Length: 301
Image 1 (cartoon, rainbow, N blue to C red):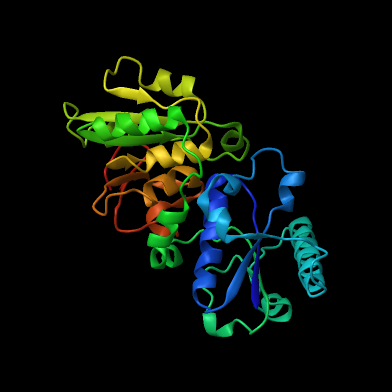
Image 2: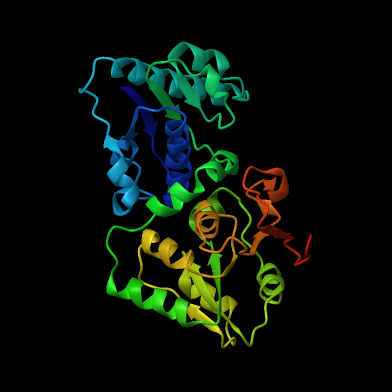
């Protein structure tokens, strides 16, 4: 049986991009086992491994170094890729052409547009973030079905009930965290959120706010009456609540992108910021037809 071994890393949004792409690769083969290597969380303490809280975990096997002698090739490939990245970074050189390495070790390294015909008939190793909506759109129904929490808490159920009882619900996702500040990534402006919110009839709309710093979000929207803050829920619970909303105003985060991408309505409207870290949304791999773009100055583009 073919094995697809995927290295999982980062927060929930990144984990979903990684495992979503692995599921797409799996869909190209009639008989393939999807194996999740989550060892990075043994020492990566900024974010937690979240897939264990979702139904998708039932479709995954957990990687064990000692299970198969053929895994030695994977272990060597990972070490060499890390070493190559380290040397290139020290020399200030770009890390671009991976084709020779992928051919040698059968590793797909962050190449989400790879031609499936080039994949050999042996184990496939996936390493990277694979931020690209194109393959995900091909398996969206499967992703919607499997990216559900295994167990619904009473608090999560109460929030979902609030959303369902609302005539028109709009999810607002906000990121203020220290990782953004440290990496000098832009934080969405109040003008951005004001413009997006003004596109909806406020008499009929309740805005459900999801934020990594909820008190800061409350400062942003002080004085507004049609706001409901989603608090004390895990990342997976927040995403499950978020995707029940009718429409979306997202920040430049993979977490908020996934909440909108998994949204229940086919005709949902998603407002997104123009700049995504250091790239423009329309030029990035995040953009699909439901997204409408707003600049940081609050201009519809």
